[in-house]
Image: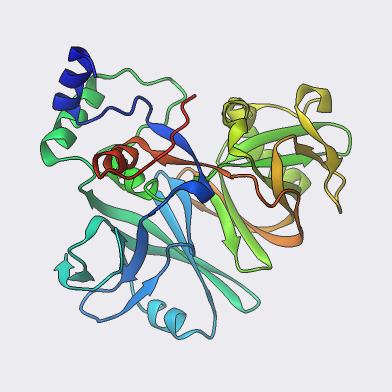
Length: 334
């Protein structure tokens, strides 16, 4: 590490050069666990793989349950919950803001109830962030980076994240978020665009979020049918480059790098690096902040490749924390 790099590290606590770092989902060892707790109650459930990250302005988290489950019956009457991001098993040996927590917790999110959707025997509870705290960087380094960000020029298309919201989003991205590709077609023309605001709600339902006012959102509402594909991590540069298509019209298939196979039911083109896909039909939606959150019925699910690492990404702060903790982490930079 050269003198300038050491100076930057001393001032900002950062050596990771990009805000979002691509990773191979299956090869990220020792990920954080996420435990949900309530205020003034000895109640905890592990939602590490069950919570859905669906929005960033405001922060939107979805939790999905069976309508007859004891967890849902208890949470239905609670206006606030806490997510604890912990290095290992949760012991509940401390409290934070009145919520049960753990001394090994490195980040916490306080969430407020914001609505729900019920489909058959499945319910999705939606929450928005109200406060986030973390120790991925020291308090001093967090302060330095806040001052630095105040003076950085943002792209015109960038959605600003005021105040504590920025830390809430950083915490949400301490869990690897799968970057999938949505394919949508009118039968002749095609659009493909990436999304990391999505997830399964059981076997039969799927949820994704798109920005209000974007053409991608309009296309989903117009055509209803879409395919969402997980892709190989090796394709990360190309997949990130598809981000501009959130504001693009449908185009010829030849404008995209596609797989030789098509989706089984809809006959839609698939991204070349597809590892698995779901065919979905949009059935409902709700708006929270700048996001329209879509609910889909799963028509079909198919695995194309079993053994190829899935593209995901994490935030720079969490990546740096892993490095500082001596955890082996393969990062891919665009």
